[in-house]
Amino acid sequence: MNKYSVGVARADIPNANGRVYPREVIEKFVEMFNGPMFGHMIGDENTEKHSYVIEKLHTDGGVLIADICTADNSKGLLLSDMIEKDAISFSAGCIGKAKAVDGVVHIEDATLISINACRKYGASISDEQNNS
Image (cartoon, rainbow, N blue to C red; front, top):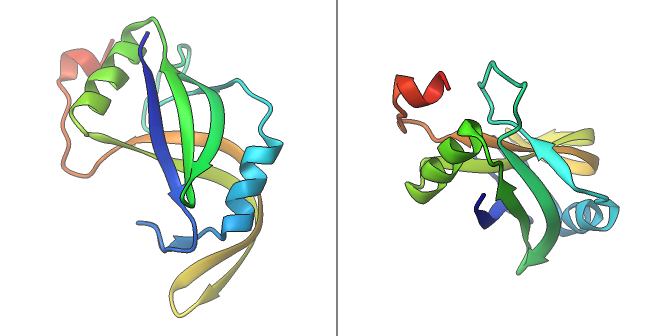
């Protein structure tokens, strides 16, 4: 098991998916968090094993930070390796209200339901590791 602090969302700036999370929404995520919360890597078809646990959420300069601990299993080892290689990113999974303006989706109110780990575009992992 390894511990990491990972960036999840940046306030008031469009993310890679064209969404903008206001600082107030990000602060609400922190206030409402009653973890721990288990996580799986996006695209992992074997969800019997979690790959990480979100232990705490906090902000730093408008950035939502998740303190995570990778699981003590093959999925956790894979995630640790991907984090060390900067081959994975984390994002907020939420439900709520949003408004599109000029191709950018502005989140107006939301409830956090997950912190997602997703392989970065172009990053590769071995088939042996992926099938563990």
